[in-house]
Amino acid sequence: MLKAAIFAVLLAFAARPAASAAETDLLVGSVRDRAGVPVAGALVRAFDAGGTLAGGAQVDADGTFAMPLSAPAHEIEVRCTYCRTERRTVDGISNVVVVVQRYAALESDVPGPADLAALPYGQIADDLSLIPFVVPRDDDTNVSDRSLGGGRGLVLDSGVPLVDFATGSSALIDFPDRYVQSISVAGPEAAFRYGSYAGGGIFAISPNAGPDSYGAVDLGGAPAAAVEPSIAGVRPAYGESNDDDILARRADLGVTENFAGGVLDASVGSAGEQIVADPNYDFSRSDDLFHLAYATASRRYRSFAEISGADVSVFDNLAQTSDYRSSYLSADVRLEHPGPVTFAIGALTTRQTAFALADTPLTGRAYDETEYVEATTGTQRDGAYAGLGLTDETVLETLASGRTQGERLALVPSVGGSVPLGPSGLYVRAGYSQALRTPTLEESDLQPSPPNGAPLERDQLEESALGFDEGKRLRAEAIAFWEDTSGFDVQRQTGLGASLVWQVAPLVSVRAWTLRASPQDFMEQYDLEPLSDTSRQSGWVTYANGDGVRFDAIAHRDIGSATRGVVLDGDAYLPLTHAAALALGSVHTTGARKYYVGLRTR
Image 1 (cartoon, one colour):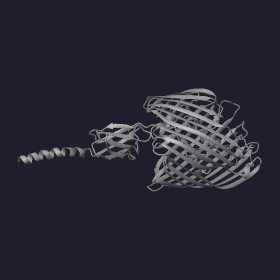
Image 2 (cartoon, one colour):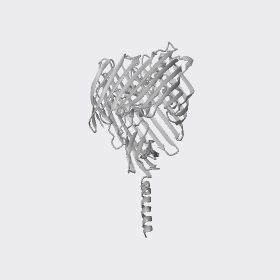
Image 3 (cartoon, one colour):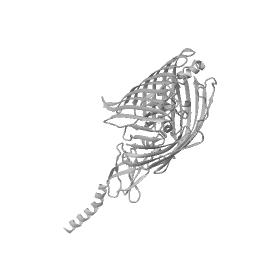
Image 4 (cartoon, helix red, strand yellow):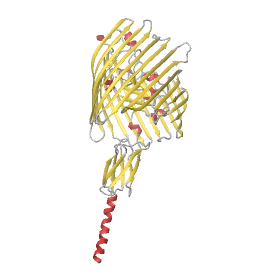
């Protein structure tokens, strides 16, 4: 009996640590940022009391993880790209929740809704010019990536790749101040998808009535108002502003619904502006547009279909072209096969017409048929892409010198990639792309006989870069590029640039970039937009305490623009309640300093 009792005691003692190990052999939890968004891909590691690694796991798309343990966990560590590393003691805990601090400045070079709500700029061209290597034209009617093509970027206006065939003005001037809340940018390497006009990059802008949407009222140098509610999936929006005595108004209506196994997105919009300062100057512009898109997705394929159109009318009693009308119609289909290498095929067709009334009426039509293939793989630091577009462009114009027409079938390639230089965060990348552009009616009238009778302009871009991205608080890159333009216009351009993003502290970030581009013009008779050296330096410092207090200070310097020297702008964003904030700011534009006070509501 005594032996049996001693054996029972020993057995119970031996079983106790085994039970403890069984209780701690699996650690589960979730990782989210301060906005409650899952941090997919974060790496979670567990350590025992002696600091030895006891397990590891990667966070799933829904923000959760399950980690087998080789020993009881004393502490866990969470690491993710552009996040502050978090450590948590977990003694005796088997289910944990970790909230991480994201470094938002490094997540994207593009200003997000929170930036657009706080920054002092009303005009969207000024917000876009904070993005590395994006340069606005002097008149703010367009922007371009790395100043390519002299401000000839393609602007997607609420999904519509709108181009004013009469004058070349982009959709940037169709938005009142404080109206744009969504920005995304694709560089010149994506031009092969669009057939024409995308050599200076692709800039998608629109109102965004999502969870970060805001209403705005500004008083001061450039009064503005914007209202963008979301009502049961329907997104009405209205805005107006009076900036430098240009009264701009716009209204949009959008809806997104699940339909026939896919997602249907539809929107319509109407915009207008007029000069109100000079009673002797009668200028007005009106735009109407629509966009319809349908997308489906499965494990093997994703499909997209879009149709969009726009109509632009302008009256100007003092300009050479006193009245004109331009229309745009586009249809696009795309099929993707996701995987380690994502393949895509697509087709785009556009129809453009324009009519301008001057001393001699000008009319024009341009038809574009583009088919393309594309392949992408990897990431920004370790990946590659390749695309090839086949474009058939037809142009028919009636000019002051007579009737001209032309047609060209052209291949438009784009290739590039990046390679890491070891584990240090250094990488190199290089790319080559081509883009096509159809001259506007104004340009064709000034030069009715281009070299080789070319109805198109072809841009070639070669670029190389050396970068550093340690995946946490610092990213830097230096670029060199060379551009050659042939066909309607003939010029060459070389340029150098550098950019830096640094999260100095969890609440303080610094973003800066510089660019110098020196073009050479080889056509003296064509001088619609005289060429000059382009130089821009931009610095942007932000203090942002989550959804709390925020301050921005911006300094930029431009050579070749009307404003000389260093320009300083700034803002303060002060929350009043959970749904409202006070915004203060100052900006130097059109040679004058302006101040504003505003109210932002969510």
